[in-house]
Amino acid sequence: MTMSRTRKTILIISGIVLTLLLVSVIGLALLFYALRNNEPSVANNSVLVLQLSGALPDYVPEDPLANRLFGNDDQSLTSLLTQFRKAKIDKRISAVLLDINSTAAGWAKADELREAIADFRTSNKPVYAFMEVGGNREYYIATACDRIYVAPAGELTINGFAAEATFYRGALDKLGIYLDVYQIGKYKNAPDQFTRKEMSEAQREVINALLDDRFNRFIDTIATARKRSSEDVRTLVDNAPLSARQAQEAGLIDATKYRNEVEDELKQRLGYKDDDKLKRVRAAEYRGVSPESLGLNKGERIAIIYASGNILSGSSGGGGPFGDQTVGSDTVVKAINDARNDKAIRAIVLRVDSPGGSALASDVIWGAVEAAKQRKPVVVSMSDVAASGGYYIATNANRILAQPSTITGSIGVFGGKPVLKGFYDWIGVNNQYVLRGKNAGMLRETEPFTPTERAKYEETIRRIYYDDFLPKVAAGRGRDVEYIHSIAQGRVWSGVQAKERGLVDEFGGLDRAVDVAKQLANISADKGVRRVIFPAPRTLLEQVFGSSDEDTSLAELKIKWQQQAAFNALPEDVRRTLRYAAIFDRMKRGEVMALMPFDLQIK
Image (cartoon, rainbow, N blue to C red; front, side, top):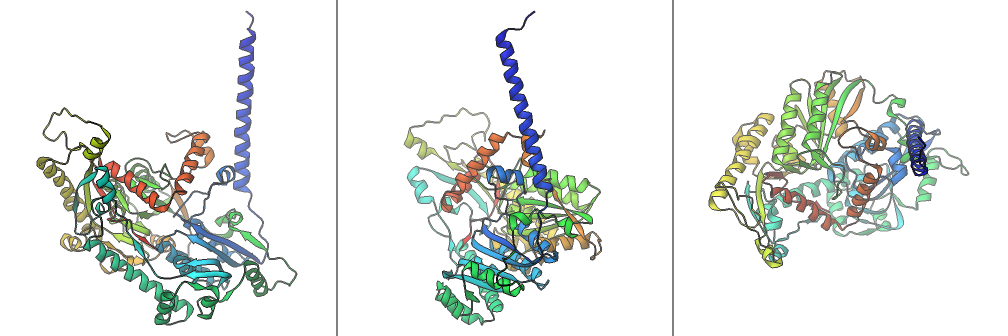
């Protein structure tokens, strides 16, 4: 039986396509292997150039292949801290040049970077900071360096702090939409931005307290670093923005120089000849130097689990349509359970950077932490924010560490639903319901709660707060419930205020949390440890060609990154609105929220 010409053609084309696919896969694999295993050559007496810019999330998996193909930015706080730790003991690195641009990193991350710079300087290697323009955060970080330089035409815009709160009630009124909500706690005013047109007195009280705390620390830190009195610094801030020349005359910076002039000064300090070229190592290259090659990240294993973003049920997300990371209870619980059951893991560090989210998802993660604690120490390291649900998942750890500027607390819950009746009438939509059961229509989005429905819904919210959240915080912190209730009420505290009230054990960042975990696991202080990320980061190839339910195609990954880039291009106010709209959309399904009471923006 002879084969038809059409069939032969189809088989030939199929064979060619399959061959090309296999060649592509092999090529990608070889490229990935080369990128992962080819450590860069670093010359002696080199200067490590670190860029500080952008959002600076706690952790982003480093994937050289994805970076090459799609221009992925894998800069994270963890990556920067690792570069400082490596450079401190790398004899080939003689100095660090910190190139500071505009950064959206939070104030706790700024504190952690200052600690890393201070630790690096104990090696007697200098850190120079260069800025074209320095805002509050950028200058605050720079003050930890040996010397600070600003471009001659630049300036310091350290003109004080402004806290911003946005309210949408007026716009929702025009659309015929309102939120029918119930909240527990005087300060649990997360729905206020949708139900009010201005700040409540409770919200204003909290924001003023946080601003006072943070501003005073800002002033005192600058005064100490630049050897000026706090009164002098306050006067300078009141007269800012300052030109680069004015900042130099005031002693806030060391000199006004262009970037090449800063490099020339580094050459002189490091003993270069005039005609020598400065040996620079970019961060992207230096990331290829493994910590293990320098004697770091060796020894007993400690698990590091990152919980960054809003807390939701299901799997964690690395971006999604609204660009932010999310904490999925399924993902985090599995990571905690895997670390608990791994006999090679001596302790667990849970790194939290979350304003909260779903109360149910938070409780599920709390349960995993409680179970893990029965087998090995669990230490929580708080980043910029660990509030509401973010504090819920931390409260039963063996030890809780935060930075003085960490936003934490907010022990309280709320729930409700958006009522869209007016909006639907406006656009001509008519919803009709046929119900069975007294409370079957509780979550109808066209009608407010009936008295019976509201009583039942409020009963659920009170149970979560009084029977779950409060007692679990009290047990975790070794306090009675009445005391915790007195400092709860949905109130947000700074790290300093939280430590004074027993919600935090000590100050410190991720590195300090690892040291505490070592102590609790009875690992000798002079022994090194290996930090193991749970869940293990999945590379681009593993995402595309792996076998898990979360595997996706290369085209889908590219679309996802494009969506995230488009979202990040939107104005920040629009991005914040969309994030909160996504959270409140979940309330339509009846979820009770343990979410920070307001989106605090201190600029």
